[in-house]
Length: 339
Image 1 (cartoon, rainbow, N blue to C red):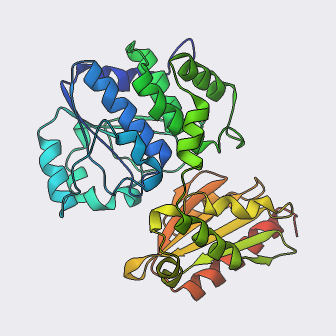
Image 2: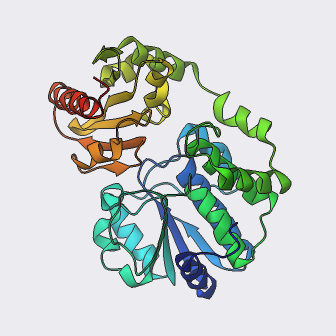
């Protein structure tokens, strides 16, 4: 942790410290960073004698269900907004982790708009909205989990073995097991602290990456079979349809990391993955080797993220979206002199 915490970190720590009860939430389709950060802060608040509740907008993906083996979550309510409004009304603070985007919180947006004064945001993404009276946003962090590590240091709350596992999950999943460009010295210092607290990296790796179902592997094969290369093999596109999910028996939450697969090809600088969802919606995941700012591309469609990893959702047809993104991608590559 830095010798001196930034004012925003101090403000968030003070707000949480003064609260007797908190409600913790994160973005829809939660990933490892979101879930690990929420669970770790929840456990830390409970250890500190506070009443803490986790409120998720989607089910926990299979890959991360092991994290909640000792902290089972209730079934998702039918009306998320109404349930969230009721739960938030009975707590001192609402803490949103790993996002500050209204688009990623659409299911609870009406209730959230009325709670600004009691909302706290902790986020490491470049883009976001003004959702809270108290916010700590810092895109220099590789993961929200790293921010939670530093927040616990500011609060002077110990990192126990129970906290180390979800925090390590948060950090390693958002850094590609520490091989993405966002892995810096601060990230490694956080990892060292978590190992010192009792985290076993080999065991966690097995739980995260060596427990896939056959259905997921078959879906990955379908995604790779759809691979198209453009712009002198510098732009790659993967597509998955609802029929692919039906045929393989895989679920939507088993597509994590698919978007990075095309970057195994040495010439690919920009990877676009389009996944058909129910209700006529398509989820787009954009990945870059660093030449193209995919967060800027995603913002054109109402999405966001990081310069090298971003995404959005669209109601456009698969064919139309492919055409638009292909044109944008080729233009972006041309502007960098790569074409």
